[in-house]
Image (cartoon, rainbow, N blue to C red; front, side):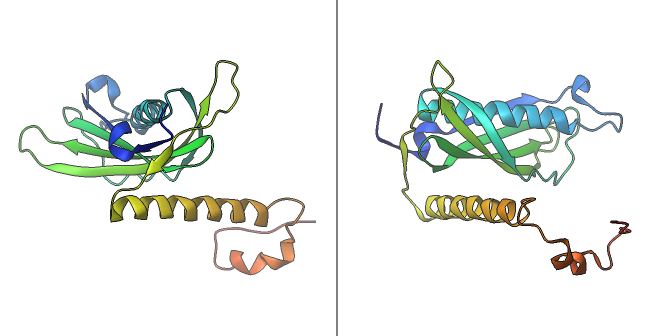
Length: 181
């Protein structure tokens, strides 16, 4: 296995026609179906990079920007944005194309943290990432920042460190009623 790989070596994309069986009660493609496709392509990309079975450790912020209609072609694109010792951040972008008029819309983007596993389910090292351009550097740096922010947020709100009085001001003007005894 290579010690480092380029983003291009692991990049994956799929295109799928959205069928009536993919729709929700509102007649749009169900978000759960899209999330499933996103997880599959993140797995494929991470496994291609690491040459190992990978599992989803976390998903960072999925915003549904535009609805997807039945009959549209949905394209998912995935690439490795960051590599740690045993984990990778895979960026996934979802676009939908109206086949009648050719317009394409960005429907969502998300970041999947994937961990490489051996046959016994133990974490294994992954190849590092060769950053070849400004965009790759931006994505790598953004992943580091996102990882750091998540750690800070998790520790800040851990039950052992949390002091309720220090956060009451944040609830002012919110749709909440406090009845802590």
